Image 1 (cartoon, rainbow, N blue to C red):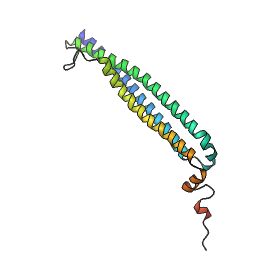
Image 2 (cartoon, rainbow, N blue to C red):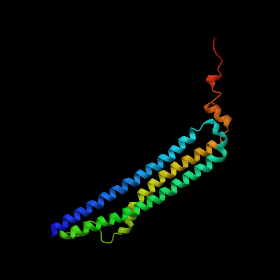
Image 3 (cartoon, rainbow, N blue to C red):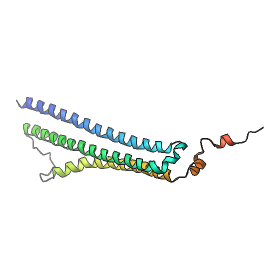
Image 4 (cartoon, rainbow, N blue to C red):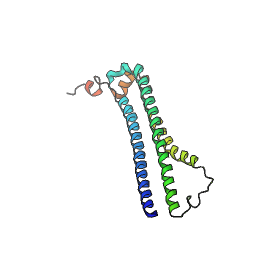
Amino acid sequence: MPKDRLKHLAKLADDRWREYEHKTQAEWRFSFGIWAVLLGATATLLNLPDSSDSLRPTLLVPLSLVLAGLALVGHWALLWWINARLAILRKEMKDILNRRRALLDLPTEPPGNDAGTDDKKYEDTYGRSSIFMQLFISVLAAALVIATAILLSLVEPEASDAIYGSAGNSAIETAPAEG
């Protein structure tokens, strides 16, 4: 009978571990997607054609603020939601491990783990460190989008023509022909 229960608990632990891995991978994939969108928006801003110069002061900064805000709020909400599910899975896996240990007449707490350890504090720290790192990277990418929009809105069209060349007045086209 204990052997069947051990197999059942092993299968249950394996199912929980697979679900945990799947949610963790989804969390990071979503984060990479958010970062790609923010960096893509920055690249798009840097490659705007000259004809959009009249839109720069009025639309670029508000649009970049909206994009960055939506990305950060959406990212934060999804990360907290996923990590709440991951905390539940971590607790279930720990409970399964303790039940397996009890069936094998082993102590439910591994050696070296004090009974007074605050499991809730550990769970919060373990889950939140990943969230904070991912949000920090998102904040940096969002700041890059906003800073790029602000800088482009401050640059006069004549200055950008001098730096990058104008589509119709490039130095190559206006150079006198030799001969």
